[in-house]
Amino acid sequence: MRYRSLGTSGLQVSVLGLGTNAFGGRADKETSIRVLHHAVDSGITFIDTANIYTGTKSEEIIGEAFEGRRQDVILATKAGMKRGDGPNDKGSSRYHIIRELEGSLRRLRTDYIDLYQIHAFDPLTPLEETLRALDDLVSSGKVRYVGASNYSAWQMMKSLAISQSQGLTSYVTVQPGYSLADRGVERELVPFCVDQGIGLIPYFPLAGGILTGKYSGGSVPSGSQLDKNPNFAQRMDSERLALGEQVAKIAAELGTTATALSLAWLMHQPAVCTVIAGATREAQIDDNVRAVELQLSEDVLQALHEASEAFIYGRPFGQVARRK
Image (tube, rainbow, N blue to C red):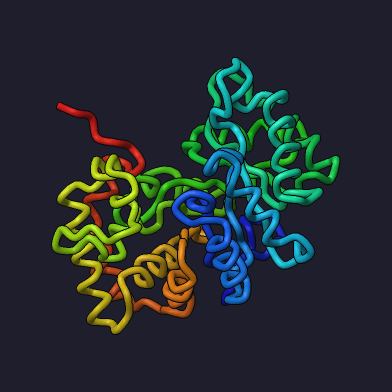
């Protein structure tokens, strides 16, 4: 395994992380715990979750899996998405952030979070309020570092400016959707991260499995995103499916898998500190880990760039197409 700094912080994280939004859902508790332990045994230290994943089951399972070995992992969780029907059950107000942190700490069976992330920009709460609340949590020792998810470049820059001007803890990372099939962040967010020293943490790195080659020829494997969630079909346009086949072809020529190649491509991109890849089976961890030592030549990087260049300007993968 290789390790990188989390942004400009001194914290080292595995270049390959583990996404856990399927734990307690597509993967039952026993399977999830096996996957977690296998990931750590394979050198993965960065474990990413959120308070909303599978109705809090993901955090609960992680807490059980690492009770007694908390020091082996870097835990990252999030708050800000809707957790109920009340007016304060979402957003990044001081009220909501502190309440949700306490719940995450209980479920994760720990007294601190390594990276606490605001799940989405909240236009109704002043950034000063959010950042002061996060600063208090860092000062209390309940949070080590803070980051954002789904923020645009201007939202991140405004956040940094407020933190720096008021002496508050600053975001060290941002977590966007990013893959060969979703390169829109390269227009503004990636240059911002390079300039400001912000660590980039891609999610959806395999575009829901499209970049693994599993959907080649129109097949729908049992247990896949499309098999479990038919609504996922709205994200599977013909252009992305064609890209998946191209990536699989390039991978075969290199003697590797489409999964490893797609993850390795992200690891070669500027500002990326760790790549969040999900897994519901131990074998998927083994396939993902292949990416870590996969060095890509300039010719391969150019071929992948040309195959996916259109997705710098395309619809974000996480955005469902509007019906005509």
